[in-house]
Length: 399
Image 1 (cartoon, rainbow, N blue to C red):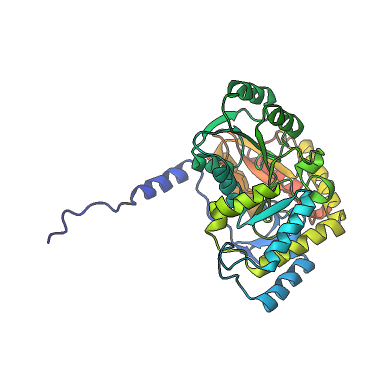
Image 2 (cartoon, rainbow, N blue to C red):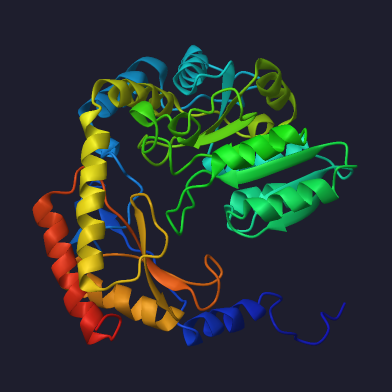
């Protein structure tokens, strides 16, 4: 039987897509970390001041977390061997969920394999095609994907625009089930949601209130309890999503709320139902991280002191940092090609500040996304600022 005429490989279009990325200055290679995730780390064979890590509090290398992980492997093995709903729920997993709920001051919590899975799995399981999701335009991609998977109608309000949100709620009052969702801290701009006003509107209109607190966990609120605690809104947010992968320093995501919410997610959240549970080492290290958060408050204090020092230095140099209010500090440059060249030049000089372009941010709003940590020294920050100023002037980013 003849095989027929030779045709192009069915994935040939990917090569063209990659050529377009290179043409637009958006093609990036993965930086390879050699050793631990530290404020001065070795990437691609070069020691650099690391301004690209989400390791806000330096917990990835904390001795208590490392020891907890090692002991869990010795006593419980390398993996759990199953999904949570069959044979993969260990006492350690339940202990972690109880600890998170107590920390966030909610009735219960459920742990997911990632923050992305927590958002996407929760939104898609809570809503259906007869329902409505009202979302901030700069919400995280995991929220957007979860909304699409839910098949609910989606309405988007301009970033942090509570008046536009109120109009949407008024216009959609006849929809039986509505969910209002926002990031707590926005991951590319570093600004904070006006949660008191958003939560009040959701409550007044009978909508479910949900927040993604990934970048405020360990950063805002007492002992890093997040945006809800920061604004003292306990009991006024129905669904709180957090991460174990950033300030906590390990891996995973979680959802906090009422006991009914968590039991429902146990039965209906697809990432929970169809993913093997966390290895013992991960769960044990996460538990140790919550101990550290409560026992070493000076870490959060140092994080904010470093943030203030770095932001003040960027302002003196004339960089545009947008509306940032947190350790996430974008350096806005506009075009993607310039952002990537700026990032590459900095790396050559010993500073790792990742360039970010479309589709992560809108076209024309490319930037370097920097994050300082509690473990940076004054010398680290001052050296980074000096190099940023020199390279920024060379490229015309600042006068």
